[in-house]
Image 1 (spheres, rainbow, N blue to C red):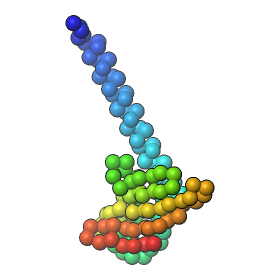
Image 2: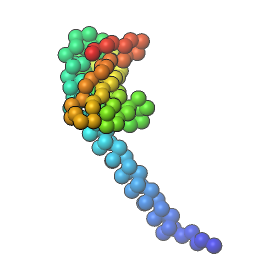
Image 3: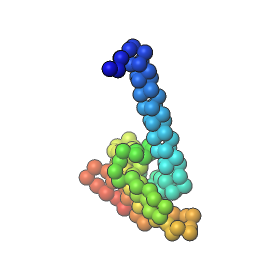
Image 4: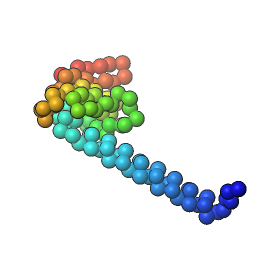
Length: 125
């Protein structure tokens, strides 16, 4: 019979905390890395320059790191779909990016760039 002691219970608790915090740290780092990619930065720049997006969201426009929990987000070597949460003084929504690239190329081609806010979807590109 396995003897349960206070030391074992504490050990399991500490191990669980370490694994959870490590997992959370890695998830946040990956989300930040995705948000800082040139593709995302270029799309955010295009959205802020688009006048209708500024009117819809309100000034100032802020963007947040994309969430790995969002099922829209998908990145492979040749295709990417990313939803970046954006907000302004009037509204909040998501900047939806669909991009692709050839295996031999380094640069992504933006196929679709849309701003989705409640009850409205604005095509930027």
